[in-house]
Length: 298
Image (cartoon, rainbow, N blue to C red):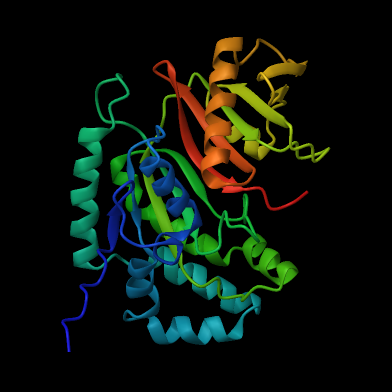
């Protein structure tokens, strides 16, 4: 019999990752795919679902985790799981690996600003950003994280697998309540002058010949959270011409930025083979894609 293949590394650099969405989770697998397509993405890495299982489900607290998982959706069990995820210290091996990858990220994350970059720590659950369920907004994302704050942020992302809203979403969709496993993405935070969410099929009318863009000045978390009213643009795919424009304040995008974003979004739609929902940030005179997921609803 041949030798067994070596186990995947617990942390994988995005763009060079080995493994699919079962190992990377939906968001990280999408970012890895974008990077392989040559699309500009912020440099970063993924703490895999294997690491999650080794740290929480197969580690010293594994028996307690198993009992709590079996008791879901009991509220006490849910709280016990989130406490385990937040309080359990990283094993020495994963801690050393995390340090090494943060060192690599320090060397890659410049954006022309000098000094250490701030970081984004994002959940990447199995099934997240997939073709049948998106989990949009269900799990944690933390922005502006310093290097020293990464480890507790990772644990909070793990814990969000069993947040009240995530459990409720799974019950609504008829999905397993345990959530399977959670990977976590750690990336350089783009110092964005503008940010946008793009749908390459109009999410209200369902028109496949139009692109809808919501955009704001600065970071894009305010769009997702609904804290601000974004600018709204509708573009016809034929000729990439603007047919509707609603500006909420000082315009977030000029026509050149808008056209470049639409062209990039249609390129990704073509490579994915279906309409997509994208998040993007503009810095250093170019667009960076933060994630891409298939549009799952009409």
